[in-house]
Image 1 (cartoon, rainbow, N blue to C red):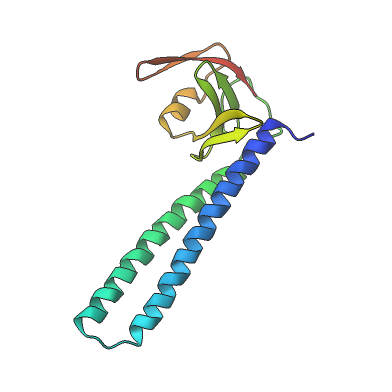
Image 2 (image 1 turned 135 degrees about the vertical axis):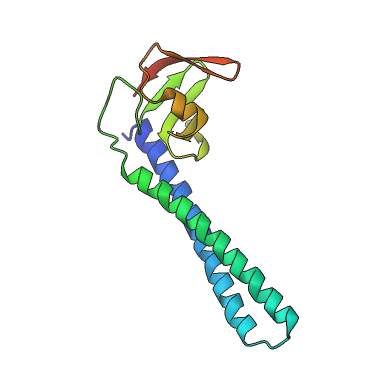
Length: 150
């Protein structure tokens, strides 16, 4: 039987792979658009079109870097190691929800339960890192009690 952390890790991996595929498709479409614009000779309209495509390529390139960094974070997670404090790869059950410290992938539903994949640099992730079972953190007006760490 698979364990919950493996399921959450797999959901995060799928999230990253979908994002990468999407960005690659956008970059490919923009490259094709640039090639087509190169064959055109419509003056100012041609230059504006090329400039817009270059901006879209730059935007997609930046997104690619962000998602690649997420993939790198996932590769650093060791699901087989347990710790008595919150660290990358921990599944933290609190009185305000359950958080998988990994990447910012958001809400994940597994077996009718809701979990939140959050990065260590997110507001909640930064508060939880290094904490132990029974510790409390305050996020805004909420007091969050750590019930367990897997």
